[in-house]
Length: 176
Image 1: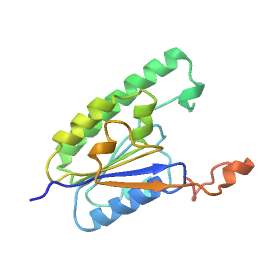
Image 2: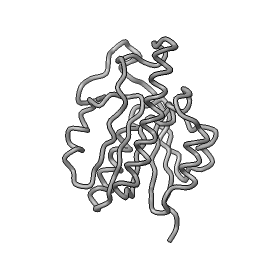
Image 3: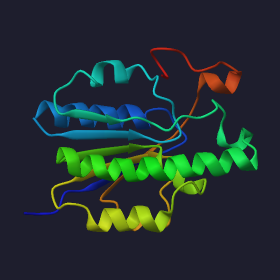
Image 4: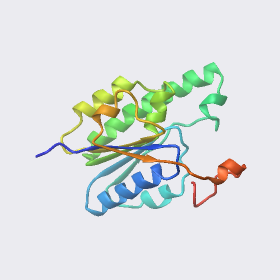
């Protein structure tokens, strides 16, 4: 059997998480156990309200934050949040084993790496040694130096225009 593939959905455009969620719903619809782990996000996105009700769909609760972006945190907050994100990564790997996942979605994990919250080498080591039948989807702004060569699919979402550029905030039901 050929080893399952690694997907990266990246770029500055909208749609990375949406694409990852779409693939996870498709996989779940085929009876695959799916694990969704979101990094650098809260647990309030609308899709979670539906996904939690699907059979074989498992969500790893995101670390709690002070509702600040990382760039807004002081050094003490960053250190504590980094500890939480590292534990979240370990919890995600445990969930893959516990549920015998066939698809793992790590939403915004590439940004967690680029911000120094988790190690690029540690993520790449997991990818190289994952179960043969585990398909992995990672999202974020850009592939990391260690993940780029390991990806079988890289899809770039490019922003051409976005309401945020005009000062509009994210909207319930569309962006979250």
